[in-house]
Image: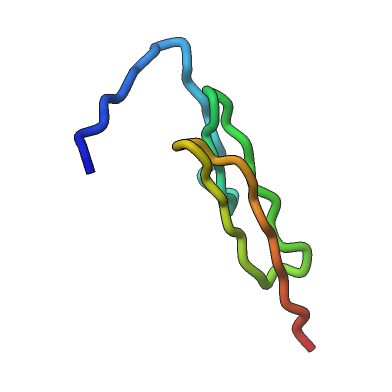
Length: 64
């Protein structure tokens, strides 16, 4: 894999709560939370296309 160039922009700053358990995706300069599995047990998959995250698939398990 080639070396990746990172662009920095002092105006593009986001703050998140580090006390909250969450998964985030950054796409086109926007920070977006990925929905958690509704039962609390499950899996989140992010699908990429042309170097950008495009879809998230959330599956869950039901615990008895």
